[in-house]
Structures are given as C-alpha cells and as structure tokens.
Image 1: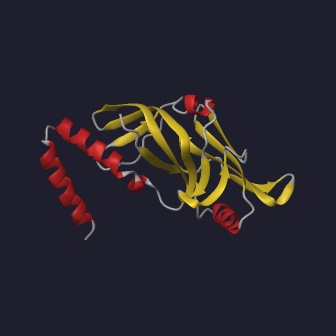
Image 2: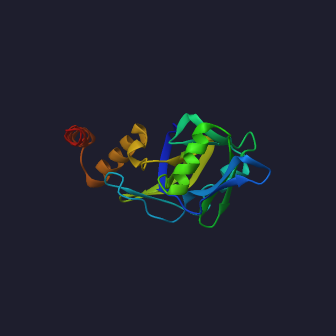
Image 3: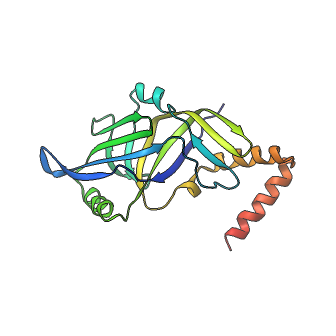
Length: 196
C-alpha cells in the first residue's frame, strides 16, 4: 500500500511561550499538536477521530519531526533530531516542547501566539492503521517520522493531500452505491462550483 502524507489541525491547547531558562534570547514553546478521541469537523462528507495510543509506536522509535510555521519547511523552529523539539504522549494526545530557534520569524510567531492570533496546531503524518465505519475515519496508528508539527493560521483540513481526498471520495462513493466514475464527475462539478 502506498503511503500518503496527511495533515490535520486542532485548536491549540496547553500553550506556553516563554524565554528559555538558560538564554533570554531563546523562546520555549509548549502546546498540544494531536488530540485523541475528538471528532473532527466535516472534512467533505466524512469525519475523523484519532484514537488514544495512535502515536505510541512512532514516538518510541525516535522519529525525525520538524516544528514549523504553517507547514512551511522554510520556517523551521525546532527539530527532534537536533534535540530542540520533544514530543510526548499522554492520554489526551501528543504534547510539543520546543526551544525555538533565535530567528526573526520565531520571535514574530511568539508575538502572534501570545496575542492569540495563532491559535491552532496541525501535524503532518502517515496513517499506519485505520478503518472506516460509514463516513467516520478512525486512525488507530500513524507515523511521524519525516513529518511535522506546526502552528498554523488557518485550519489545514482543506490542505489535506489530494490523495487522501481521493481515497475518501472513493470510499464514500462505494458506501453510497454510486459508481466511481459518476462520483468523480459529481465531485469535480462541486469543486468547480466552489471556485466560482
């Protein structure tokens, strides 16, 4: 099975931005990037829930994860490989602790976070184990290695990869008994209308 990179966004919780203890120029960030057992918003006719323990295996394997702004690889704040980003799991999801780089965009992000202008987090991952129940997608395990956690301006549900949207469309078409070609044609019409 081909792996598809995906992204999800949740409200930013458990956030703190403060000067690191050993260097007043560095900023320390804490927040929650993944929430468990919470139903997503409508993702185009389907919803998703990430089950507790979904990150356990990947976090045990010390994944290489980047902390970004808006999933932009040019706006790197910290990284697990360098030891400036730590991810941990509790019963509610995945927590982020980062010593952000002493760069202008990190200081700008800190101001926006403190003001509440940046108020959501997102994470990029690969699904390892999942299932569908009607229009509910349950993620039981995902892989973070090579992925990211990001503070984001807008929810990234609309930025979910085209491959995932296509998979969900095929699944929903099969569930409702529509032939795939007819479903694709109708979805293309809806996408064109949404661009007007």
